[in-house]
Length: 624
Image (cartoon, rainbow, N blue to C red):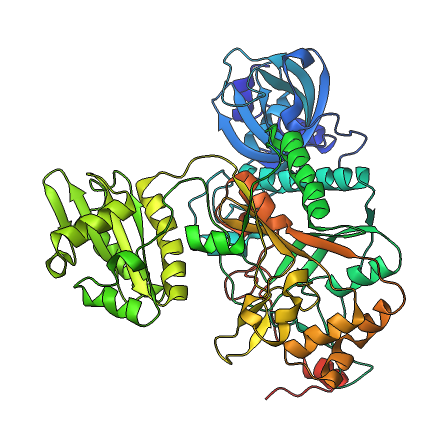
């Protein structure tokens, strides 16, 4: 029967209806085709949609997936069927059984289908997809699930607002680009397991409900029903447990650890995240760094076929701050900071002179060949940018072919201005941007400004630039209390030569700590640990913890060190950030299946949510 005949009224409706009752696809009622969902029956998937190629032509294949698109062209129907591997075109024509053709005409976007047929070469090929040379000539079609019209198009780079997509995250996760992100994440995890296993690491799980200990951020607390008034904490990291595993003799530990921190969110931060957590015994800094450099090289070669040259460069924290204004500098472009304090401290510009007189710092960056892009209007925007992050203002010089213009030229002599430009290494076409403030504000502001200017100029190279930052300060001052706190955590070992400074000059104490930075993002943080019980007690005292407080919070750890603690150290690699950087994404939400938004809530399930009074009563909790 010609294909077009199925759109006409049947000659004998009762006969067709009786025949249709035995068919597994649909029911024919006059012109109406009612599509019924079916089970898979004895058919089983033989291929994923994205696997079929010309070499499969002539084979019978069974595929399953979601309808990406249906095109009804009268005598021809094409259905693009999608699964996580890609798309295959299903073809229905005048050789297709009538009931199968009719069923194909009724499918809609996001219907779930099983299709069986013969793979054949397409007459009109699609070079945009890997399966574009073949199609499946369908002989059997089973609708497995209907779908309402989705609230947004299931397509790559969907323009629908993220809040809507997160509300329907199970649909958002069908998008091919997000699916590839999640699949790549899986490959990275598998590759990491393979590498660390080959290096003798043992994967060990540590508890999720632990004792609350100070580790830098707020804990998420879990009330105990049995021990009313007492709380577990969700781990910010498995730090204490992995150190205890070293004492227990498991000299190479690894875990893909879930970590939780109650802190304000941003694009590169989530309240719950995954860390490739590891610890090693009988090692020094070089050992830890070398093993993990090997992982970086192995990972990028296996997953992306990119060769990462080793060893990775290393700079100290002091050098990173001085040259780039950041402890996680992006080295994919130049534009280093230049200290102008001695050059301009006696000039006639009061802002510079006052900063120098008050032990401040005057530093600048030279944006090469930027005068054409950084107009006065753009510099005004940069001025607002630096004010927004704590600086008082921004001084500037534009060196154009028509001459130099500056925000402070009238306060300086020609010789002073020439000396400043010479110190900056600036030439015609360049723009000099200067901040004068306290040393901390000047350096951090220019570090952020350096990155902002590079983005505006489009000078950031497309590459993977790794860097180790070492010798972090052990202590930093809490801006609210003014007290010294541990920059990493209190179990980090100080540099041997700096131990005498613990009692007299905390600001100069350096830690055996190191961070791995990739393209300006901190990927991991680690350190060599304290294993001497006396030194650990001394460190607690330097952090302001009384003997009683340290015993209550960490007594079990110090006691463990009394029974033969090996020298050990380790680090935690942020898996989410690593995946984000490898994929070149902008937000962690793109590489996590079910992420939180910036207020730490999940839009889809609407958590956190209230609980009923009975649950609260069982926990001994009353809400004010």
